Amino acid sequence: MEDDALPKAAPGFTSHFTDPVYEDPAGEFTPFGTDEGWDLLHEWADRRSELNTSSTVSQLLEESGFGEMEHQLDVPEPAGIPGPGGQVDAATIVIGAGFTLLRLTGHVDEQGKRLTLKALNVLIDRYDSPSELLRQRADLESWQG
Image (tube, rainbow, N blue to C red; front, side, top):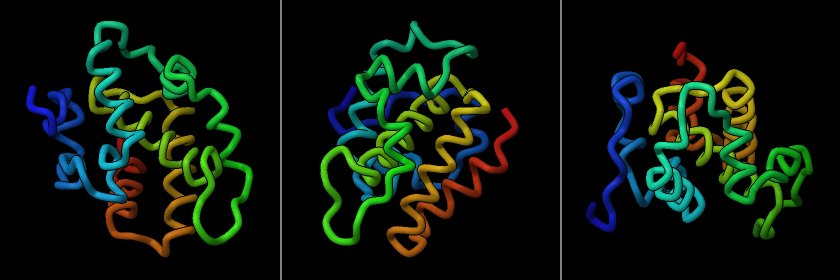
């Protein structure tokens, strides 16, 4: 795999998440354009055999050392430059985990879907509704897989 290539996506992911945002490895507001999103995707692509339709976003977070991030979504962060491990980091990591599970398995658990939507809303509110985040939210809301 090329250094900047994204791992092959599950057919269910590819058929629903068609916007270029899902193939952008560098966009500030794309699921895999952040360091955290990129690292989660590639870590779990290497461990894809451990994933199945019963895998959850919470499991991915926990097994990647980010178990506390779910709770950080509820801790408001002051305006200005986000701090490490704060709400913005948590949102970025949760979004990366949610879309990693979707990309690699074509599945997301219901709680994980809600958690990923919550994380998207944190960033949408903080950064004044970037179109990339609005697209991800709309696509995830309509996901029935």
